[in-house]
Image (cartoon, rainbow, N blue to C red; front, side):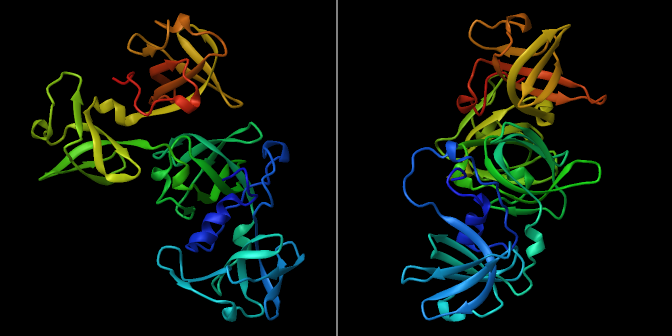
Length: 371
């Protein structure tokens, strides 16, 4: 999706017409587009200048004018209010008026979708640094995430209470591997702050996991509370599998309040638990990142995550797994690794698990290297 259109997150916004802030992404390198399969969709936001019988003229945000043709297949939508409580409704060509802001999804000047934006729409909300890439790390507690851009950069981007989300409920809904579009603003200290962040759920891996402390059991439903204090409820079915390190948990009846659980879910059935694992409480404070081994010296592992070098402490409790890999000395430069780690009080990073030799696209959702 992101390789075929220039404003990747805008198409999601226009198609659903649920937000007025649009996340944009730089136009990708034509060489990365692959073979030409016909005209590509173009996305535009602008002001209506003139209205004809079956077309209208628009001035885009760059000041350029465009003649847009309307057909019987053109879809019109209208939204008013804030993204959280706005009303999305059907609209028509007759609802256009001169001076109105519209979002248009068009091919060669023929409109496929026209979104009538609210009267209070602020085009300044679209200005900023437009980024697109793949998430390689999310730190909900720290309020930031990292992406690998198409240009090969690894960027750290923070969020705040004003960040708008498209296709996401919040930062905790973002997953490693998601393809995202970000509209960011550089701060005085040089950091990047996300003004808007979008990630279509259809791009995500099929499985995900949610960890937390068991705080409720109601019939066949369990409720866990994560480290941010947010609760998550899941239904237990005949297909739900149970497990624990000591082998004492075989079913719902073996669960006890305050146990720390890792629940495996399917995006197509997010309210149902595919598996429930009893884990060490320390796992809730762990994060993960992917990269290539740079060096292993003095009990430390340094990896290249994009253009960033990250160093981890490796101790006798670090679990290291991989084909013909038994310890730190077996890791060689350039080897691809997934590192599960914990940030210590002195800000050093302690590797809890290292999975070696697995390509990013095949990295398991729940590798067997957790404590």
